[in-house]
Amino acid sequence: MNIVCDKALLSSAIDGVSKAVTLRSSIPALEGILLKAEGFQLTLTGYDLEMGITTTIEANVRQAGEIVLSAKLLGDMVRRLPSGEVSIYTNESGNATIKGGVAEFDILAMSASDYPDLPTPGADHTLTIKAGMLRGMIEKTLYAVSQDDKKPAHTGELFAIEEDKLTVVALDGYRLAIVERPVQAEKHIRIIIPAKTLTEINKLLGDDEDDVRISANRRFVVFNSGNYTILSRLIEGEFLNYANVIPNGCKTRVVLETRDFIDTIERASLIITERLKNPLRILFDASGKVTVRCQTNLGKVVDEFSAQVEGDPVEIGFNNRYLLDALRNARCEKVVLELSGPLSPVKILPEEGEDFIYLVLPVRFKND
Image 1 (tube, one colour):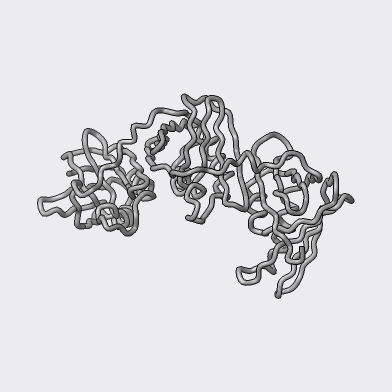
Image 2 (cartoon, helix red, strand yellow):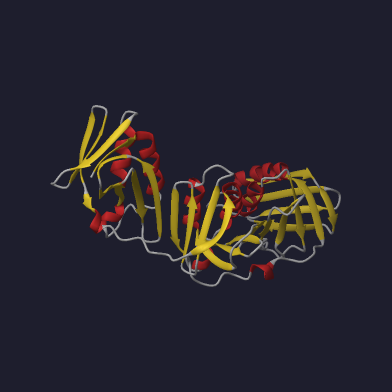
């Protein structure tokens, strides 16, 4: 193989596909990037047996071929080369030479035959969505994905695709995040996409108005965005029937400034540590006050702010982090809290529109 390409394009492509490269593997080739040169382009692939990322850049291909190079080493070398053109070529001994300007590296190359083939997903086109819309849906829900492997289905997000809408759901047993958007889909399918895949997709999405093609079947999902193709295995298992846990109606309705609530919780959280945990006691009073209390061995705090409170007064315990995650990801000036009692899930909604539905489970006080 012998190619010459632009350093900036190559560095960006290496960074992109490296997101699917495993740091340690029993298959050494998987710690590398597969480079394939043919025609007028260079194709780079990263793969960790669960997710594969492929991208193509323009290149002057003097000799076609394919090799595998250490992802970390290649990335570090190209990043430190001077701007301009980079050449990569291999010799008969199996070494690769990476050259830019007067700088030249010789490193060991691995045979492309040692690199596992990416699976052929056989997935049909399911829908096309704007990158900005998909990015927003992922960002508003990813915080609620479970970190507990005991329920594998909840370590990913449910994509419920219908002919006229896409619903993305994440939950971890303590909070629930739902975002729904109108789309035009080719078919109806429910799939669970690993959180890692969605995290990396979000980093690779282009401008908001760029189209993202999603193809899916029961085993795989494929995202095509710009020059990138991201293939991922899906998570098997049953996702919770989330519609059954969303409360209908409420006894108390609160409209408040999101920033006021966040600031108050952050101040109260100063006396909460990993070792000294205690729930926040939050009183929603019909007089229009929200009072936040907390006490640990570090001390105690009382804080309050004004809000519109309708219905019965109620005091509820919350995990500070779970409540903060929901409020920060709401990304709107005002939110509505719908409460049905001290032990019922709290529904958090935007004041206007139907941008999201968040649920946060309350914490039972020890003396209750």
